[in-house]
Length: 182
Ligand code: FNR
Image (cartoon, rainbow, N blue to C red):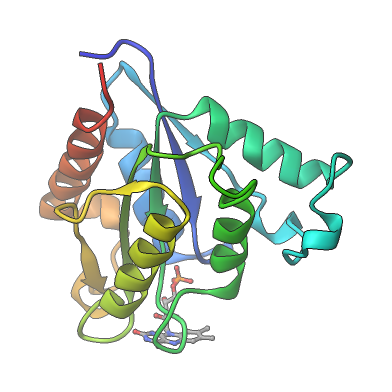
């Protein structure tokens, strides 16, 4: 068991009452004691990626994001699907994470993608696309970790009230932690 594993958590939805934020919170709450879950909640503060501003004096939120990424051992993305793909804010964050080219602060670190969406497939397109982008950005995507929740199945409940879902989220965190080299 790695005594000091840190998992960086990104939520693709920016809205306050986000179901994906709720799922992320349950995952955070279910983490074993030796795992530190760090939610980076500032995706809306990241400027749109532009190579002209990706310089030594890059904006402070980018520095904070890359520092959090460098300090983390793994990445958990919890996202809805927007128009058959990933929300723009999340894609922008992945673009910042992917640079410097070949030297991402999360290079070769394990990553998992889960989330909830309105459609009956639970956002599986977005989850597949996030996996594709993260892999191209240099992370080691764990394809076997999947969870795409159709929001209707929550029946208006908070995910914390659904025992099966809580158990599954605990498993997601456990499986991702197990991918971190000891
Ligand atoms: C959506 N939604 C959505 N759902 C889906 O299953 N497939 C899709 O392509 C889209 N597209 C889409 C675009 C935009 C701009 C919005 C705002 C929403 C619905 C979406 O899954 C639903 O609102 C989720 O509840 C959003 O997640 P949060 O905000 O609750 O975490």
